Amino acid sequence: DGGVREFVLIHEHITARQRAEEALLRSERQSRTILESITDAFCAFDRDWRFTYVNRQAEVLLGRSREDLIGKSQWDVYADTLGTDVERHFRQTVAENASATFEYYYPPHERWYEVHAYPSPEGLSIYFRDVSERKRAEGSRLYDLVIATATPGHPWTACPPYLQLGLEEPMPHLDARLLPNELTLPVIPVALL
Image (tube, rainbow, N blue to C red; front, side, top):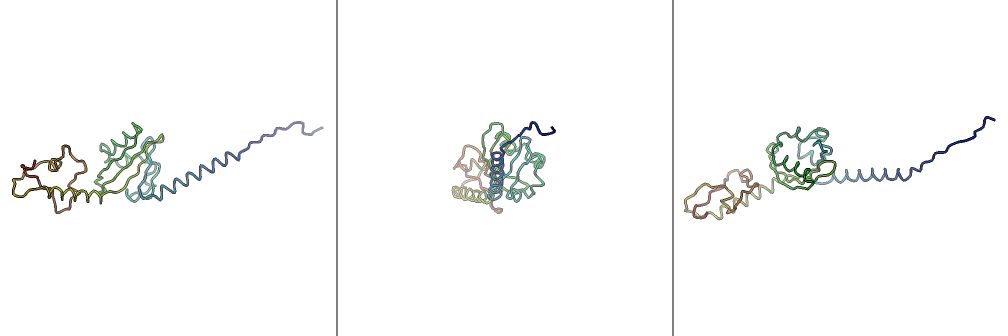
């Protein structure tokens, strides 16, 4: 008779999947908007230390475009950070799956950065900001403290700056680069040590 005897109807309800995909896209757009609007610099790295995201503020502070960084290894682009606190903190953060906050002076930029590092299953995310102005202010206050504790008329002796301040351990952020150019730290009289 030539007519259709059987047919198979396959019907899949895809509305729920479409809604989920649309929600995911909205969430990704919202996250991107937030990361682009914050005043902190933000970078994300995969497990092989390749840049996967760089926001506008990171481009400004790093002096490089995201197109120049995405897909490249942190350790290739910034090879001068190998063997430094940056590498140690980044690797430790990922290995221990624990966040870290540290400050680091990066000589090529002549800037101090405050860095917040957060591990994830995908790799590492960092937020950072230029804190050079604050560090200079701290150095100036430190200088004022040293001057205020010095007693005129005593013989001077050279000793490490942390001992000059009566501290038992060095202060990593005590840095002569933070002091006004025309000033250097005086030494404290032996009698005051």
